[in-house]
Length: 319
Image (cartoon, rainbow, N blue to C red; front, side, top):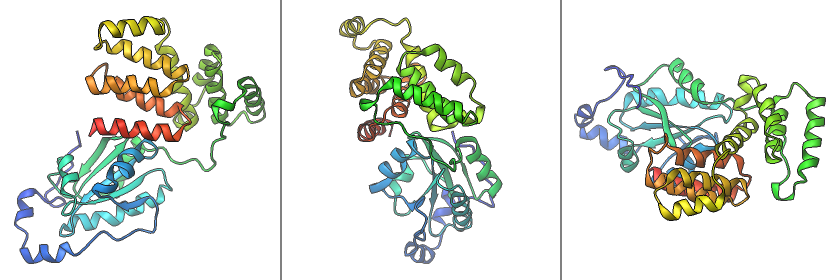
């Protein structure tokens, strides 16, 4: 639930909205949010909201600013949000929703006061505030959820289908030895070791990662893969799980284990199909396990087209 930091001086209530003079509304309708030259700041509409906000939030958190042209506090807040997002250098995006024109989006979020700002991450709202808050509040909110972009890109491995895993591990060992102060290389090595079945060594490497390094893409990928490997430790085999599901299609734990076995076995689409069934059947099952499993699957997969397809499927179930 959004924290309601609302002060009378800073927010406009629904009752106040109806008291606005018709002439003022007519003038305001002709106004729009300025078009930004920054690629991380944009106007959101029904046409682009799913792709540019919900789906995009799996890669980069999106701050959604619900505003209206006649709302004075909105106009006071907007330049500050622009400034904060510009200074974030791509670690967060800003989507501006004109609630006069995009009432369906505002309605889906239950917006009742302007301005309202919502932070979307992994396809769902995770935080936000109401009213024209000071810059310190906005920065504190982002600090809890947004990881600053690293100045250097992380090293990329070749496509998994073409990889000589033993050669990759040897190369990464050499890189780690040559650059021991680069924890992202240790995370890459841990991920490769997990793919090779060397669970103990991979866990040892991940345990030694400093706290800030665990939020890197490489560490998130390795930790997501580790969670899948651990999930099926001691779980029934594939044929047993399929038989259990045939007897009881609502056996969601069996579906999860089968999905993980498919995913780690190389059939990612079949695995994610099982996670979608869990999400569709019972959103609350095992603390939203269906959604969490899909998000972790997106982290370990290199096929951007397949990930995009299943993100859209997941998003359609969430909203």
